[in-house]
Length: 122
Image 1 (cartoon, rainbow, N blue to C red):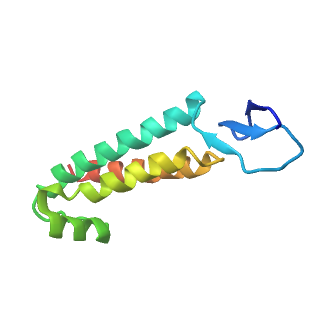
Image 2: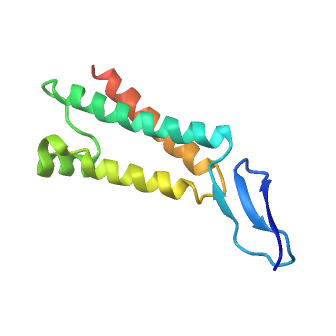
């Protein structure tokens, strides 16, 4: 049995890999401050998106641009954000298995644009 150790890969996440000659799949979890910062920023932007969406939708003439969220709002009413919570939870868990940072950077960027779009309507 080969010993394993923790190494910091070139992409910036703390990965556990086998040191032996076997090339196995690495398990990567957000352990470095940058990875945790992106994850916290993503969750914070999702919360801000829910809050700003609720405030913007209270203004007459404003509607939800995302058709999936519009359907969720039509079917679930005040708790329209529950499916969003499920997706955010899934992405947070999935992020611990990603070996690169760019998917989370992309998710944070899209979330930030959604919040900025909501703020322009307030």
